[in-house]
Amino acid sequence: MKKMKLSDLLESVFNLLLGILPVVFWLCIIYSFDENVAASITIIAMIIHELGHVFCIFWFTKRWQIPKGAFNGLRLTEENLESYPKQILQYASGAMCNLLAAACMIPWRSLLGDYANLFIILNVATAVSNLFPIDGYDGYRIMELLIQYLSFDYRAFRALEIFSFLFIFAMCILSLFLVYTFGNGYWAMGIFLFATIKKLQKWQSYRTKDD
Image (cartoon, rainbow, N blue to C red; front, side, top):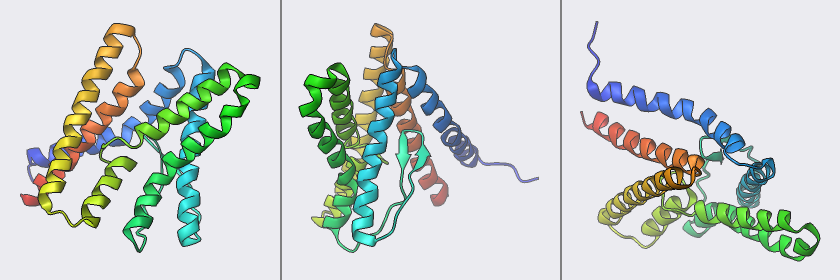
């Protein structure tokens, strides 16, 4: 029987973790909020975000996509559109849809009160967080496309990889501080921990190919 290499073992462990963690995410989002309303509006904000991508992709391709569950929310299959501006708009459309939804709710604040304020805050938070420079997020893909569009060399991609990892590490430390100090932030900690595992899995896959 062929002995498994350490790199192959690590690859299998990372893949197993990436397969299990989506279930953990949805349990965290349901049970990590003190109020069910906040959890419900957070899920609605996720759906609004993905609908922005769905309508943008349909506008360019005339094909509908159905979002699929992922650890840090919902995901669509990437479309290779024919121009960089269209591809950038494809990734920016989710955040734009969240901001539009938040703006449309402003006139209803006097009628809905705290519910409207929570809806606005969570949609803005969803828009901003998805533009973080984290591998797999819209912000990371937008930065990759801008680097290609502006014809920067490989050092720009290397700098983006390093900056992304340092950003994820800083967010992990911050979320740990929030959990330790306030007893909140388990959801955020889980997301950034997942992003760290995904980044390590990506680098490990590169090493495996080189071997």
